[in-house]
Amino acid sequence: MTLRFVIDPDLTPELRAEIVALWIDVTNAGGAVGFVAPVTAADVRTIADPTLAAIADGPDRLLLGYAGDRLVAMAIFTDNRFHLKAHYRILTRVMVHPGSQGDGFGLDLMREAERIGRRLGLDALQVTVRDGLGLDRFYRRLGYREVGRLPGALRVGTGDDRDEILMWLDLSAGRPGRRTTRATNDPAASRPG
Image (cartoon, rainbow, N blue to C red; front, side, top):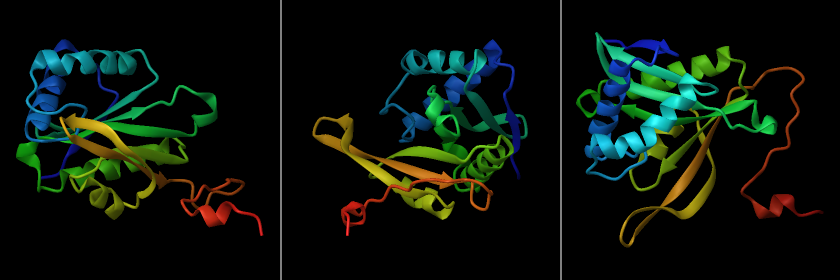
């Protein structure tokens, strides 16, 4: 089965409830989408409500993936809200329903996000990844590269701090007239001489 994608849907009360239900199911199955299991609808709404408001009122964009009529995947194109970073978006709340994992829907979702990013004229997409779950390998297969790491930035439990990994997908390759100064993780590269 292939996913049917919808970008910028009308955020009806019914759809909001479906999104919260997906978020709960993903979190309670161990997904790294802003919470640590177990969560309830009330827990998720503390983040979901302002997140969905930023979509409804702009500037963020919502991508949903459906298997038939069932919501099984989502990602949010989160605006940086800073004019010097208007050329890229951060993909947040990237999730696939646990009952649909292993069907290739995660790959399909991320490929669709890349296609939309290119269509929007973005130069790049960024994702942040919770270390310790192997998610960085998934994103590397899609062409993302690690560009930074915040050691112990995510406290998922007592004595369990995880690195937050910053990953980047360049969408601008081959575009004429683009000039960038690339950062590197090699300190020797920034030294003169």
